[in-house]
Image (tube, rainbow, N blue to C red; front, top):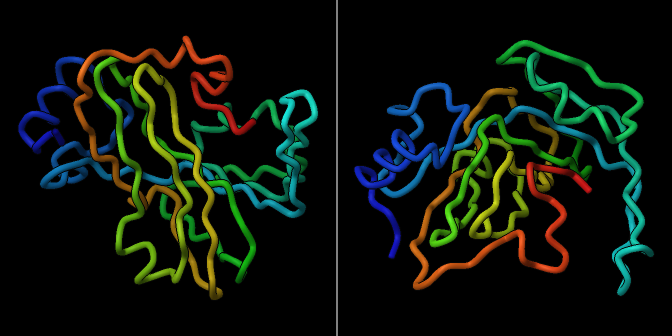
Amino acid sequence: MHFSRPILKSLIEKQKLVSGFRDLEKQLTANGIDLRLAALVEIVDGGKLAVEKSDNKMPKLGKAFVLKGYEMRLAEYGIEKIESVDEKFAVKLNPLRPYFAVTCEEVNIPSNVMCHIESRTTLFRLTQSGLFTTVGEAGYRGFLTFMLLPFLGSEIELGSRFSQLVFTELRGESHYEQQAQANYQGGKLF
């Protein structure tokens, strides 16, 4: 069962289901919460997903734009050029150039809840971009990272609301940490 706005608001305020929001009333929707964009990182060459995790290859990263105060989210990835910017800084998106999109908000998902991650319709209507996402697993804690793919040249401001989370209660409990490959706890690109 999906959480309604009043239930979601209560869980955010009392259990810190989501933290780091700027304006809870503005970001809450009828059945979810909007997430803001903290950073964009260019992906300039593809990586490799292998059968064995040790054989995986990270993609090559290009320039990054990050809101001031969120730089630590990109610190461990060897990004050569990171530009720290103020909110409302507009990043020019290059057509068909993929970017990692990192959220301002962090989640603290209990063991009996998971979340669906979706694009806001304004993202694809105004920037002609697709957002590649997954699900937020029960027990996951940290910021979120997605892939943004603009189809045309457009712009997006850091700090803008670009994605939405919708939370679902699970029957029974599940624990992210108990997965054999659960290595993204806390929020990691790789």
